[in-house]
Image (cartoon, rainbow, N blue to C red; front, side, top):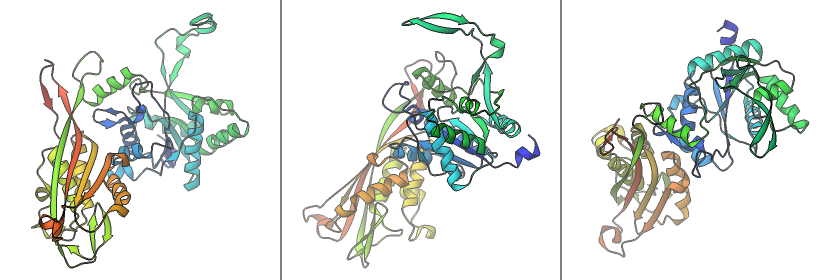
Length: 429
């Protein structure tokens, strides 16, 4: 890569707003898991890993914020640092790309932009390097791979029947991929012009750039940079990221076992004017006696997650004898447990907490607590439940001497089928 190309500010737009349901099920393909991680998580990680990309602008469906947040929670902190706030996409891919470009322009326009499909998680640094170099030199460049099949241009004369008009020479044909690379200003102008002239339906930015009069070149793509479109693609990607044989018919495939973990925590009341519950500070006529902030809900939930992966308890990871944790905020305990689950390739499906207390009442704080736990754990709001009950004046809770919480966490952990098909061996971190 030339010195001038290396000095360019490069951003990426990741198009993840599509429904993508051809793979089956009701979950868009970019949020389906391959090798224990969401497709979108893998795509974002691959782009964020590149030192050539300074900023990434995700484009998501307006109703996919919870799914996106879960994907982002699985990224390394350094990778998350490159992400801009997601912007909502449109009804078509072209509209979504335009939204991403406008999002970049509002903050700081880069010199060069790479437009990439969320459903291409196999993008690697070599391809990114070629994309940046080609875009810097030519202004508009798309990756392409030679086609091995003979292609026919046809005109449909009946349903499912087409008359051949031409057989193009295969040596002149390329199957186009992403990331596609452009000088930012000209591509943004082309999209704005298309909106002004009511031109929609371009299936890739190379075609839109051609329409706008930009000279587009094709650089060397990567046959491994395949797009997940059908169910078979998802299965093959799962095998590849699981480290098993790439062929669909060979080798083991990652499957998942559901684990349920439970946790319990209790703290006595003492002098004070608030308690922490579920990461929310709640005014109260007393506080709790604790080494940390005494958040019984987060403590119980942390133990539930650690139990689900059979990795000790909260005291094992954060011993009360360690002064480092005196007065510590309990959100870091829960976040640590969630990271341990994901380090094993696991997925958190549901978190359920019951608070046992005569006071304080949590009804007015319930939704704030759910939202805070979802944020800490990186799960959708719908995956968090919190309830409260008294003990009918019985026991220490009934006597208002303290409060307690019990929690349950449901997670899925990967296991790999061995060749006999009759045994399984869990893959552990």
